[in-house]
Length: 359
Image (tube, rainbow, N blue to C red):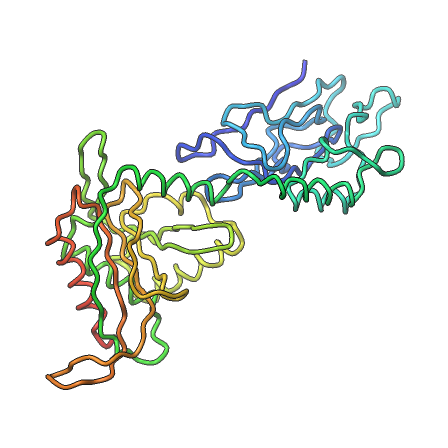
């Protein structure tokens, strides 16, 4: 009887994952811990290793398919002889008939397989036009073009964003207050992100109610002592919000290292899932892309998000006279079900006070 391998629990309450690419095919011999498939959770790509050595009898799902935790992922053929050890590839047997049948495997050159994986095309579902029933590059491109014309399901990062935004729109009673910080005193080459992180810590210290989670169903509010700051990061795939932990007890250099490591992990799509959950409050530096003020989206169970708009020189009154100063626009959106206007104003005032310090 075949041994069925099911998609394991990937942690943090995840219920499903999207197949990104298979690293093995039907008939291949694999060994324990060899990568079988790459899957994408809501925000991270994870390699799923083989639980054992043996021959692959069947694969369940193609790139782009969603697989539930506990659903069949791969089947191992019942071995008629002892495992041949840690060897990747086919193992010659005493007789050809003893080898696992590979007749069901799609015929395609490695370059064609790579193209299909990058385009999210399932080779098994294609009509092959090449010699001896092999799939060609043109077959793959034609299938990808047809899928694009028909539209594709929202998956991966964008799917997580869709669900989070929908939940926020359904649950949160949002309100926004805005103001500007005079940062004309900042030295050249000031690390804006680190200054904003430090200011967020000051805001949470002055008004702890914004560093909280709210459970609407249970009608409970949890105010956190530690500040685990989510930082909204825009990518081509959608919006990430990785976490910088315990920002209130870290110095500027430590925060800077943490931010740089976070950026590299996101660019490589290798950020661990545990660094994408547990945000107690969020920061969005959207001004690097444009815009001064914004109504931001509060993602439950959080109750607040601060946005920094595009800084610029403007004429303001200083000591009763007009002066040109560099101002940083700030927008604080909060869940008015559990955060009062006074608490929000107190938070924003503390943020501004910290930002207006020279260093």
